[in-house]
Length: 180
Figure 1 (cartoon, rainbow, N blue to C red):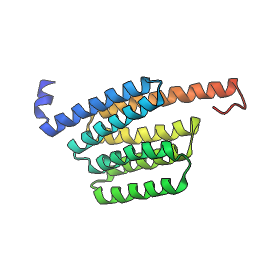
Figure 2 (cartoon, rainbow, N blue to C red):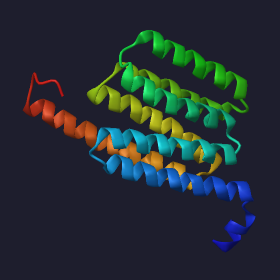
Figure 3 (cartoon, helix red, strand yellow):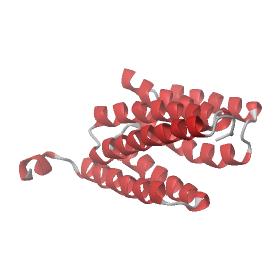
Figure 4 (cartoon, rainbow, N blue to C red):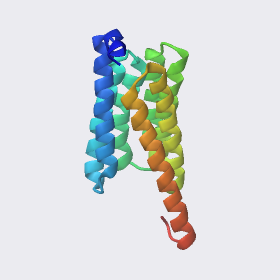
């Protein structure tokens, strides 16, 4: 373990630290029952993720994560607004094009597109499936860059989504016709 740590650069160590900070914000956020507090914690987590990506020099992921923060605020306020969603998708594509470095930059772009469409247009089980796919895309990016905190955070999001999908499905069977 000490040998592994001695081989890391300062930037890589800081990237790992910010990944773990983001993980902590995600855990506290998803454990929280207050939606407003959850959003603040998710924004905080995404600030830490953006810093993590910057320290790992994953520039497409860093830039798109900053846009995730904007998306969280806009999607809450303008749910279902196709023009705002389309504008945000166009900005995501432009930012990805400007920062693209390797083929693996497809993962943060896929995550950003899936998350944007999901948050603006979907709800319930469909939303969680799409956000789960976005989390899987972020996880693949975190595996490529080697972020332990990032991998664990997205794994937690995936597990949480699967559990919530199961709970929503059970509730739908128990209460047919009720909009969950």
